[in-house]
Length: 376
Image (cartoon, rainbow, N blue to C red; front, side):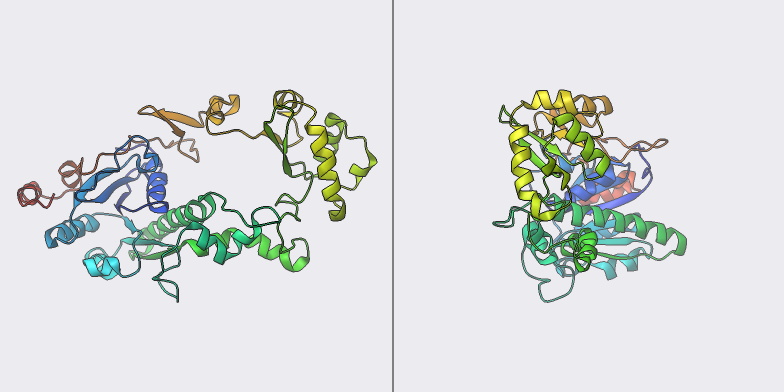
């Protein structure tokens, strides 16, 4: 039995890209027993570097084969939830849509991950993370004054998509256990990204947030919430928003210029940013770490992917682990009584064609017949 607070939860995952696999990784890390339905003949998926595929079991099927669909329905019958990331209508055409799944298992929670949602004028259009962020208002708010910039795909795909789908699936499972009724979770990335912007939409009418880039407290407009280049070319981040933390920065960094008294005056920020940049450029990052790290200045070095796993704080907490020779983030969040764990490396496509159905209670003769027919 897998380790973690979701131990005993069974989920069917229909293989996809981006936010779907990341959602599966989150749930598997917390102990869910996930059987992933991969495309028969697929050649990628089991490499150790496919870290978001970790911890599941893989069955390879041709979903155009009615017997393969029948096996999926048998697995769905025994599952708490399933999720897929196809365009609206694809699963219905395969005979695996919500109606078919709920008819087979009225308690199933059916998760649907898309960019635009199951309905609406854009539902059938292709798109990617940046497009969804653009429609939510998030992309407009991120970047320098000159232009919006893509903030990797962590805000849309993973933040607005994977996390909201995982939350929706778990909420649906709790509801199904209380009511006996499953339901469909329509997780649209554009809506998850919009939800993440809730605070800023609230600040906008008050005048505390301008609908411009690099002029606000949290978007690089403020001198006290920004990144700065050090003498050695490396970078640090500062974030002393609260007055007591700002006062401590001034004390430790020697910011005696009375101009720094105007912490919250927007019109002073560009000049103060330039002044602070000159001060930070006078020391190396190592020197700033020695002076500021661990204090209430709200400070951290800006670390690259090679350096972050080696930072003493991350090492002390085991924030990163190594699996099959690949350094990667450990499961999060942490649980005191039922800790999660990486349940295993990414599986080879079809590695569990026989064992997974048998473990889920599919009749052995049925599994053998499917193997003989080439369905598995």
